[in-house]
Amino acid sequence: MSARSKPRSRVLEAVLATLVTAAIGALTWLFLVYPADVRGSGRGASELTVIVQSDDGIDEVAAELEHLGAIDDAWLFAFYARLLGADESLRRGPVRVRGDMSIHTLLARLADGLGPTQIDILVPEGFDRHEIAARLARWDVCDEDAFLEATEDRALLDELEIPGPTAEGYLFPDTYTLSTGSDPRELVRRFVRTFRSGTREAFEDDDGPSRDRLRALGLDDHAVLVLASIVEQEAVAREEQPLIAGVFVNRLESDTFLPRHRLQADPTIAYGCREAPTRASCEGFDGRRITRAMLEDAGNPYNSYRREGLPPGPICNPGLPAIRAVLEHARHQDFYFVARGGGRHVFSATLDAHNEGVSDLRAREREAN
Image (cartoon, rainbow, N blue to C red; front, side):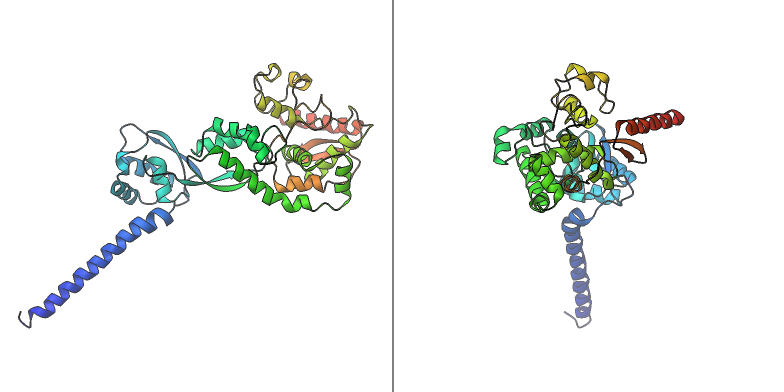
């Protein structure tokens, strides 16, 4: 080899080495960083539905994802999908995704054969078990009916030391990272473990006159949770939760409030219809408006207008503030409250004052219409 060709050979070797290094770096980024760390642009809604038509290919799907804001670069997403062979196994029909999913999680939602995906699921304060089941099913975490059955499994409830008829109330509100295809019983266990750890301090702190009053009424931790679930449903403004809890405790305690020891809370009736929608009184229930037939149905075990004391179990899954609101309820003389707008209520000690508040509310509603 001539002296002139040696430098040229070294240059070629250096160029090849640079190209190989760049290619390895690009492939490393594509297979390790891109699928795990790259997420949507955030331009789209938090929850998105992609309709994959029967004749759509990965290019059409990627273009739609970019349009919705779930990804930034349609061509790169399509290229990565082809490398994994996902373009040959796309699911057809509506597919729910989120704009903040990782690329691999997003692709696993769109194509079969890439294994389970992990999804952050929010369980909001005040969701009941039916709403949680529907949300889990919508994201393919588990079957809706299977989850509801798990929340009613007496053996599982005994294992978890839940005295109520279902796990309602113990499915603690939080954001959970869950996998698609999860075991419903394991999900219930996880929700309840989070409840135990999240509420332990609140229940263990048993000092104060409000706690003494609850004990005098025979309200144990489960009863507190039942009452907290009603407060969660009734209170819009969080700062009113202790006031509303105080109203309900007054009703349970008083021998002069009529009808005696009845909570008279609309959300309990609604929950009874949610649990038994085939009841005659629940026919046509739209999930909001309480009808006269529902009010008069003494056979509804959750009808707190016709039955004394607490309903059989919680009517939703309250957050920690609602639980603390019962444990540390406000001490006052009020027995009534009625909405006054803006998520606030007017509290009254007498029926006459309460009726005036109701009349004012109806007058405002007429003016608004």
